[in-house]
Amino acid sequence: MISTERLYTIRMLRLSDSLLNRPVMSLRTGQQVGTTLGAIINPNNLKIEGFYCSSNFSKHECVLLYQDIRDIIPQGFVVDDHEALTPPEELIRLKSVMDIGFQLLGKPVVTISKRRVGKVNDYATEIETMYVQKIYVSRSVLKSLTEGSLSIDRNQINEITDKKIIINELLNSTPAAASIPA
View 1 (cartoon, rainbow, N blue to C red):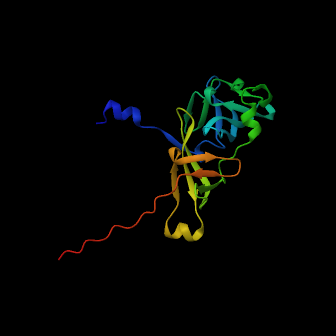
View 2 (cartoon, one colour):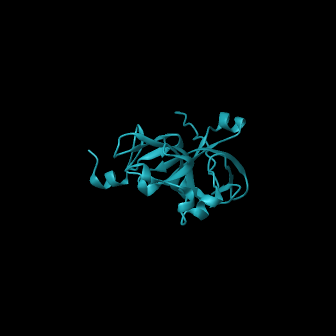
View 3 (tube, rainbow, N blue to C red):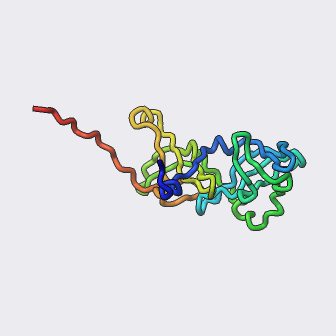
């Protein structure tokens, strides 16, 4: 049995694939009102502020703010109705973040000492707060064969710039010496 303290520390993480290109469903009508196209990520705190969406009621791209999402179910995102999809020009407070056009996928990752680690190929988001908690880095072919892919927690990220993500130095793991019985 899980203690109540431990229960509160369990977070529901979702990979980017389960958030993008997903239907947006109306709670009021039970019908699809749009489709998520891309995440609007604030590079200052790695929070998903919303999603660019296509709308079944408009020919123009709309935005679904994270606070308008009622639930995330296997069928997609649940919102009250189609009015949760807002034209981008109406979102004055979010304009500066949208103007940045920050893309996390494909962003190069380097250490503080400028050692190249790889590129972001996925990320995991905590769905209650919409903060990106982990980034997954694909490495060069040689490194991926010998060391595998890399998972980086948000607290290991030192800085995010327009061109790259700078992380703390990686610990070199050395295999434990096998003890030989006498």
